[in-house]
Length: 268
Image 1: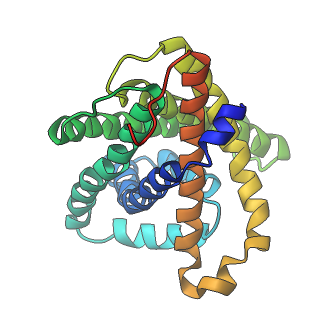
Image 2: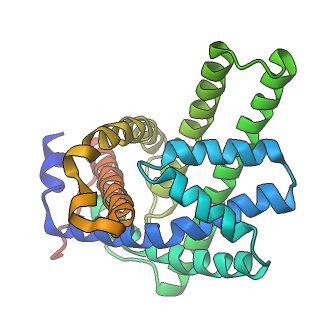
């Protein structure tokens, strides 16, 4: 734990986290457009659409109504928006995984990074895998919401709302853990211990959920609105992505340290 805390003070770690955060925000909205387009216009599933929007409200730390309103407007627009979103998602996803691969290679002590072309290929695989996990989470949540509706009908009881929330959070947490796991496992340019990575992915997935609510509670004290005005939502999302990047790198360092890896310094 002390080694991990010291690792997070390194300048290059913050550089990697900021790079990941910027590209994550760039790819986030195109990803949402694609997800909503699939549920609403391709699968024609109101239940999956409602489940996706509910999960989105829970994931976003702020500006939920603003984001969802503009998201609905884009999805209702012409078909070209989805094509543009796909192109943007493929382009920006590589920007997320490129610095992240370099950071994970440093953590595990792998001396050589992948070539640019190979990194693009693994980035596409990871982007597709992360999107598939998110879609499966939405589908599972929608299926269980349908079962609740089948059992309780249209009753708006507290028990039904609590059960729906628990179901949604459970599948979302599993998807988050899965995304952390495949990133930790596939992205480094070398073999890593699978079971150690799985254990750390579970811990980081849970910590990420807890940290999100802590970040939401801290937002009134940070007061981004006062400092950034109309750009407050963007700054809020970038800062949250930066903290998430730090948490992911901390998990990798913790896993490598527990596995006895000998990370190289950035100078090496």
